[in-house]
Length: 334
Image 1 (cartoon, helix red, strand yellow):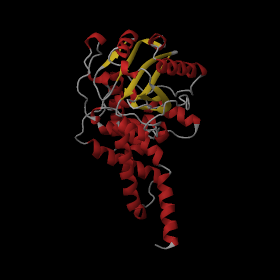
Image 2: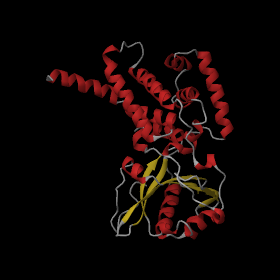
Image 3: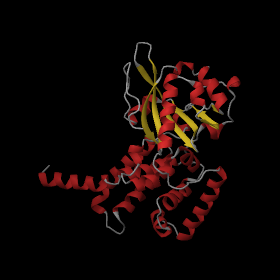
Image 4: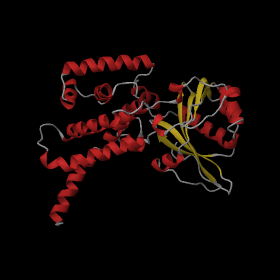
């Protein structure tokens, strides 16, 4: 390969790669899976690379990439089941009656996504994007038919014009507007909508998270439950079991969850929310991965602890270490 050809290839790659992060966010909202989203974006990039010489410039490179990504996602969604959260699948359990049950397949769950893979660098744009990747919103999107999902994301989240979406999907503006109306109605029926842009963490929120970290690491359940909203939830994918209320959460943590005593937490970000990599004490010393916790809060109280237990896949995705020594700083990243 000549140096000129290599330079041209690098330029082509750079031309496409500048859109990878926003395409990953789009595909994640479409698919509800971090891993499938990355596969979809990689397939999009491969197809675009192979076709770039034939790109005629009738639309922008960005619009062209979104068209390819949409087609890839629609193909991946064809015949697939609906991803969900535990709260979408069963009623909450009382601790006294709770049975963990068998784990469900990873394809059953809305999976967490690192902010580093989807969030724009600009603070204002980050605030705008954060709400549209939160777990509840991504789960609500899964109730929509795939093309309605694409229309709603492109119109409501990414602020495309109806004419642009119609061109991308090869349909009419009237059809796009009709699909958007139906998508809005379906989303409203779930009780979840995209809300206003989220402000950066306030000092109050940072204090709340620091108190949660200290309470969890000391396993002081009275201190921890004092931070929870009355109707706070605890879920543990890949298990369908979940519970609601500070009392049941405390009883679970002191009962079936007692082996979490002595855990260490490493701060990170997922789905626009603060998160922690949880490491439980290992039999041979140190601490080993146990869960990725995504913390949701409102009005100065924690409203949700989402503990994803598939650490073999998630910790490498989030860049979290595969083991902690006996002592490890925990508050980096808050």
